[in-house]
Image 1: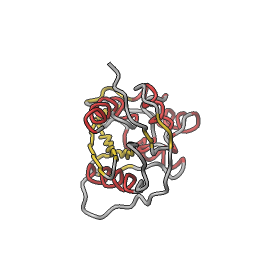
Image 2: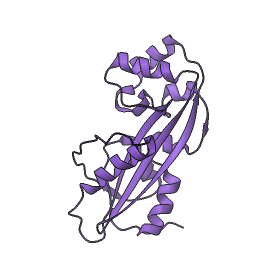
Image 3: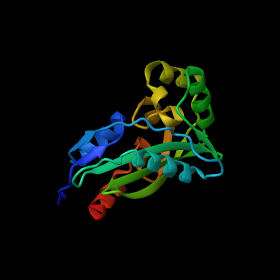
Length: 190
């Protein structure tokens, strides 16, 4: 059974998040706000993702009626180090070389805002990459789109198809929005 949701605002320009929300059968509109994504020192990776997601949520202070805003932040972590979006092709190559043959974590924090209330949650998925060659990485950089993704890859793209051996946790979390948890949280938040 599909629950009837109030008006939903997705505060994300990510086409992957937009597609996942559409697949959930949820009607929404997109509203973007510029938010400084800096964070204080000393936070764990999950706390960083949550801090940034909540910072994005707090930018929506003029909601009307029972609108619900969804904000999110996804980070990739290996050896306790956050791998952001690559600055250029050389950076993408370094990031993907670091991931090769190793496990990393993808952490997505999601915040829901309604009537001044914010509810946040965080999902963590372990992603195991097999060894990938320099040629494979170069091919992906040339033919894929690593520049707009944390960790320089999209699980649903070519590199994800050839490199990921297994995942412990939510697949859609790695895409950028943990849909199973989001749906449950929306049902209890509205």
